Length: 210
Image (cartoon, rainbow, N blue to C red; front, top):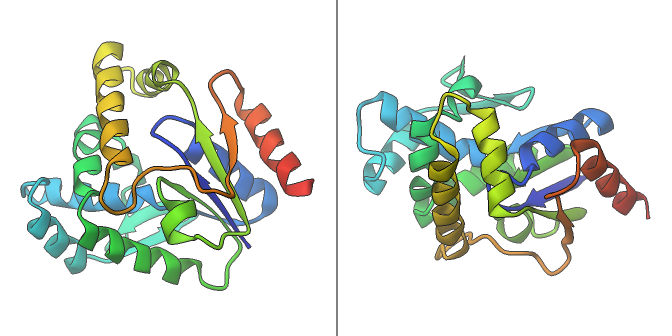
């Protein structure tokens, strides 16, 4: 079974998907972490993360694996490095390259084959798993999403900076030539702006059991 969740940055996808996977005994797979991992690898190699050809070369030169939902690069757990301000800054531009997106999609589908998974991203329901058993789209106001991100990274950029970046990122994600952020026709829309994590989980489970 595939439960797929889409939505913009800060809408609660990762947190809810992890909890759902744990609750259901499913495998958790964050498709956006692949782009973050490739961005991280490019930065750590001292290479330009905005050079699409170079990023693709880096991506194909390393091995990504997932264990308990955490991303590993060449066997090393890098999950705690994937949400730094620097990776946040470049992962969206990195993910625009159609060649990289297709490469990631192939990897994700291969990992998910024959498994029960909860997966989330920005084109998970529309491109990667268009035939998912359940599709959800999480949303929230840009202001609340900025508040959440600022709280997650108290030592990072201030609220106004985060809000501006989120709004720019929304624009980029919605206008990608490939894998644009949009609501799938069959997706169940959930506005998480004023909901607790528990309430969102309950809504998802209710929808699955209805």
